[in-house]
Length: 89
Length: 369
Image (cartoon, rainbow over all chains, first blue to last red; front, side):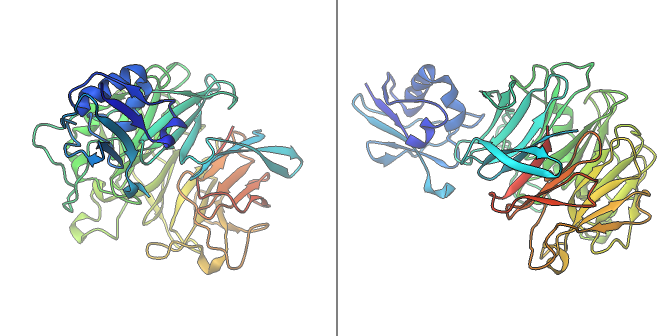
């Protein structure tokens, strides 16, 4: 199962330790994580479900390409990192 | 009289308390390290609200029912999904996102409207909540009003609603002010809106748009609670006053040291008395001659006193934003905070000032509670 880890800076606002989830895409994996941590959704995604402008997601070390619908595929053993983009300062 | 002050800053919500005659001190901080856009107290139930702007993680809203001992995160407004392929641009061609950027104003409804809150936001959406902020609904009529598309950023990249005045005579009558986009009033709880800018002018606009409602950049709009036909606006262009319930506005000219500024507060009982914090306009945005002063009129703008006792009068470059001047409910105590982290308090309507802080983070807003 893919493993999702969240930046330490998010833990100040919403406790969200790494979790293993079922999902074939970034979207499905995040949705599964949000069922564990419902408050987290608004911190990572905007009201339209897109990745927030100053956030970044890496899958096995590669930045995702679809920030809008989060359709990038993830393999069973994928490591998904949800991070802050440095663009936010 | 209010004995406590909340100071919303770039790095937390600071609390100060009165310690005796003319003595105030900081005593605590909430959300230390986080960007607090503004705070609001709902005087119907005493609840405090703090609007946060996390940058990376978006705008959030928190509520405290025990004066800051504990906070609960509430819902936030959501902008609608734009029509397929729709990219909205302001009239200068810059994209306006349909996304919550920031809370810029919170206001409670009347006592007869329990649970009703209004939120003005960037990029120009007005939202209402019927459940004390748990859930929010966009005021569609305003968002889809054709004139709204002519609003543009003023002080921020996107337009924003920074003032919401709920008429004390009728909770369905609500006025908003937009930087930059004019003054709009609904008489029917938000179903329809009309512009109320007659008499305002915008020197910075092209000649044919100088008097257009959408060109006006009111920096702050206030209504006198005890005399609600009386309104004041600190406008980008100067000071405007209305004595006929915002039907027409009169420009107040020749105010020294400057007619430019961001905040205005009006006395709760005396509509002729109002306070301003003047600054050099546009390119500089600093106090004139490096002197921090507050302007007070007691005669409806015919004359002003420039108050400075206790305020720095040399090498001071404090700028005071639109929500960073507050007056308590008695009209006696004033406080203001600056972008360089200073906060001053007066207990006698501005005649004398004491320094509360000089090294806080940049101050967005102050609020007596």
